[in-house]
Image (cartoon, rainbow, N blue to C red; front, side, top):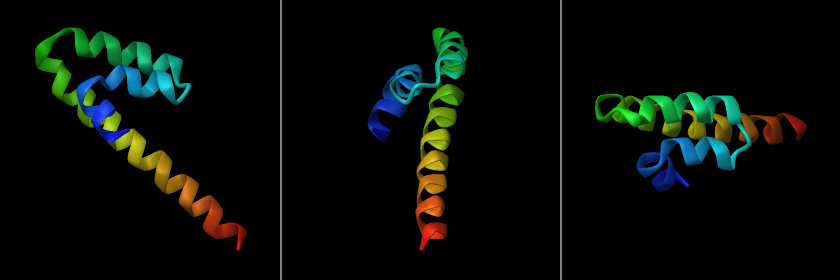
Length: 61
């Protein structure tokens, strides 16, 4: 999933069900200059959601 977030940042958001962020990321991705920040944002968002999921599972124990 991280590879998808780097190569196709907007697709990463769409696959996780975040439509508004995916559209905003697609607008950023259209320009080559803003593609790198969009990719970084997608990876950071992916890792953040994974960490939140881990913390939720950890707090249940």
